[in-house]
Amino acid sequence: MKIGIVCYPTFGGSGVVATELGIELSKRGHEVHFITYKQPVRLELLSNNVHFHEVNVPKYPLFHYQPYELALSSKLVDMVKLHGIEVLHVHYAIPHAYAAYMAKKMLQEEGIHVPIVTTLHGTDITLVGSHPFYKTAVTFSINKSDAVTAVSESLKKDTLRLFDIKNDIHVVTNFIDIGKQKEAFTDCQRAMMAQDNELIITHISNLRKVKRIPDVIKVFYKIQQQLPAKLMLVGEGPEKKAAETLCEELGISNQVVFLGNSNEIDRILCFSDLFILPSETESFGLAALEAMAAGVPVISSNSGGIPEVNKHGVSGYLSPVGDVDDMAKNALSILKEKTTLKQFKQQAKAQAALFDIHEIVPQYETIYKEALSKY
Ligand code: GMT
Image (cartoon, rainbow, N blue to C red; front, top):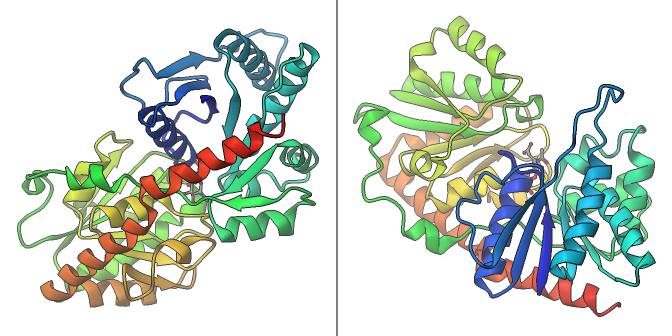
C-alpha cells in the first residue's frame, strides 16, 4: 500500500509512534510518505520506501496565527495526487484529522477517494481536544474519519465519555521493537554518569505540568536518603526551571543531571536502574514501555492507560497520583536488594514483549485494508 503519515515530528510520544510505525510499514513492503513540517526526529534514514514531504507555512504579517491546517490540507491533496497515496493515517487529532478531512473532500471533487485513519494519542482528547474552543471541530473530524484508533482502552473510554462519537474506536496499543532492544549495548558507558555503587533513576518526558516533575524529584529525594543514587532528567519543557529550583532547595542539585532532549534514549535506558512516571494523566505511557523493554522497572502513577502497560508487582509498581511516599516505598523495595532488582528487570522486559511491534503493526494493516474496502 501507499500510506501517507501525518504526525508531529518533534520529541513526543505520538510522533515517535508514528515514525516507528512508518519505518516498520516500509520494512513490510509498503511505500510510506511522512507529511509534516519537519523531518521526524527518529526518521534518520530515508530509503526508496520512505519519503518525507515538508509542509511549509509562509509567514505573512497579516496573520496573527499562521494557517497550518490550510497548508497541510493543500500539501496532502498534492502528495496524494503526485504519489498515488491510497490511505492517510493521521496521528493526533488536532489539527491533523481536521486537515485530512478537508483534503479528502477536495480530492473527492476530482474523483479521488482516500480513506482517513485517525489515531488518538491522549492529550488531543484529554487535555486539548475536549476544551470547548476545539471540541466541536474535534468531534466532527473524529466522526468523519473512516477508521479511528486509540492507543489504550483507557483512552477509548475517555474519548467516548468526552465526545459524542458515532464511529467505532479500535484499540491498537503503542508498541516497541523488541528485536532492536536485544541488539542493545555491550557497554553503555555507565561509569560516565555515576559511581559504581550509585543507582541510576531516570525520567524522560517533555517536562510539562501533566508529568508532575516535582513528584519525580520528591521520590528521588526519598530514595537517595537511603541509597546512593543519581537522577537523570531527560527532556525539555516548561517545568524545567522549577525542577532545577526544587533540586537546589532540597540540596540535591549535584545528584541530578538534566540531559535535555536526547537522541541517545537507548543508551540512557541501558544504564538506568529505575524509571519514574508519576503523571497526572497518561493515555499509554510510551516512555514507560521503552524503559521496560530495556529492562528498567517502572514506578508510576495508576492514571489513564498506565495500568495497561506497567503491571503492579511485576514490571514495577503503581500508586495513586501524587502519593510520593508510596512511590518512594515501592522504589526502595525494588532497589534495596540486588536480587529483587534483577528479578524486576527481567519481569519488566517480559511484560514489554507483549507490545512487540510485530504483533501490533499488522493490526494497522488490517484497519487500512478495511478502510480502503469502503471505496
Ligand atoms: O506524553 C506527552 O505529553 C506527549 C504526547 C504526544 O501526543 O506526543 O503523548 C501522548 O501520546 C503518547 C503516544 O501514544 C502516549 O504514550 C502518552 O501517554 C500520551 N500522553 C498523555 O496522554 C499525557
